[in-house]
Image (cartoon, rainbow, N blue to C red; front, side, top):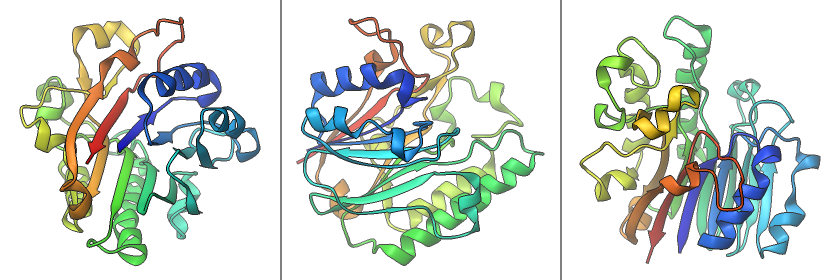
Length: 259
């Protein structure tokens, strides 16, 4: 089974690229973030033509999350059910082939002195509580998406360039670790302990071609699922202009294959 996550940075602009990638790579489950669509504008028909059921949570502004599955999609639920939901449509859960899949888009945080940074920490804490309320670590649970946190210095191109910045601060990393401590594994790290492999590159100054990126898109799996993982990869090709000329997101796909 192939489980993937992708911040598509506007599904309205990126739908041809997403469909092209899905046709070529046949993921069983794809989590998407930053769709920037309202629910009534979500292109469920386009996914259905490829054999996927889908669910979406969005209001047409800057956020929006979705799940597409060709192995069933049951019991969709959106939002954290708390005041943190005022920060946008950022969580969608559904059961796919017995796995409780969560597509998440964590707030950016902007800067360490910003109110948005506090919102980010609160949101991550609420996600940890949500998982405990609705799941058990012993179950098959996947939490996938754009966390806007690089777990380790090995996940940024130059740690010195990020001193005093969000995405790498100790409180953010501690909040992510608390989510992991609930009972999840950063499965990509197990297969690539060396670091230096990224999922996001700024559009500016040719950072993608210079290798100046960060790994902030994660697939976190409960122990039962992590034990089934046979590979974990980041698809750099999906960050390039596609063979059909479709323009990329600033993020690319993280793909975990389960036995």
